Length: 226
Image (cartoon, rainbow, N blue to C red; front, side, top):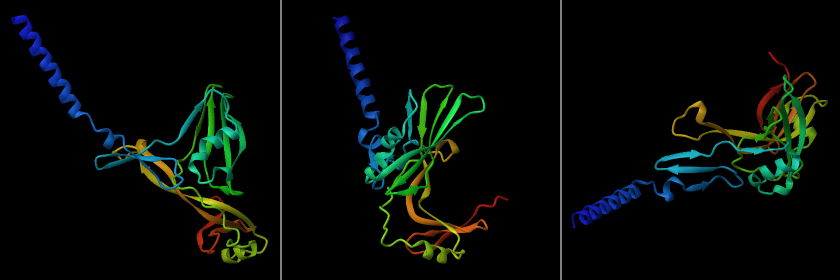
């Protein structure tokens, strides 16, 4: 009788501890809740109480060297119309030791170059890792009927008629955090949006980046290095 009583008491104690642990466990509806970012964005925010943390920067690991089609498949979810996305390889640069390879990828959307930094790298011919800044909002299609002509772009940039004209979706970067501490380890540099822009560069090395539709100067540019 004593043995049965002790065993029964132990079972009750175990049940009480398990029940208490379940009450202390964070609710999936709060800690694991995902809030999808801006339209076309690939990242998400995780809400924990009053804190909001973003997912880490995208990183895809492959046992083989990625192709342009592989990279396009990785980036496609970030764009409203993935069929308008084009990816091409810029260069394959071996490291000084001959073991560290890097591929830079050039992106175009709706026929216009994207300001981006997408790279794949491999060390010692091992796995390939592709990284990029998370894109929170897809660029809209280039409004060709409303965009400035080459001549109008040069006029707004106040440069000579011989200046080169380059159309681009300029990335607008935002600072985000993947942890409660605002430290360098937790910082994530994301693309919050894109601006349809035109870069005009004079033969003297001075020019301007202007809004593709209004002609407003976004910033002055130069090819000179101090």
